Length: 168
Figure 1 (cartoon, helix red, strand yellow):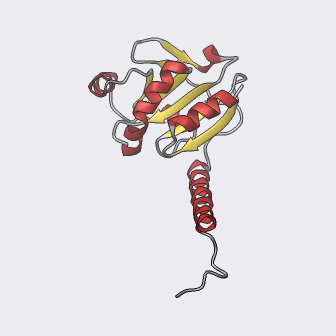
Figure 2: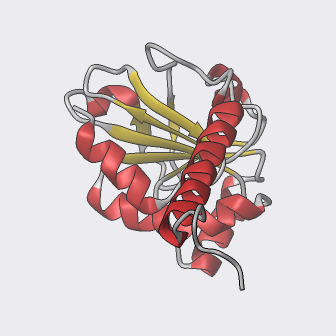
């Protein structure tokens, strides 16, 4: 019969594993986000699928989520419903990079039941200004037009909501 003396309690072993997992995920997030734009948000202007002019200037004084994605990206597909729900509650601009024409994007949105605003970046020019190497990438821009947070890869709806709430 094994002795329980010297054995660590189960909760302590689990908490160590959970802490390791959190640190590992944070390291992966940091690694993916290295090289993304920092400081003042790059220029962002264009027309959304409705033909309305999109510019970060119209969001001065409030935080805005800028989300780069693509129709062919499996991680983007996992996030798209969360992004759609966020668009109902917060200022949000999405940029569909290298995903086809405006018509093709509108068909995709209709098929998936998505209503968030989309700027077409078929050639990747906007993504290049924002130093995007892959998608998905999310930026939170504060009310002064500065990048308050940037993340690459999958991000939870709760995490984005919390960051938007904490950004002024």
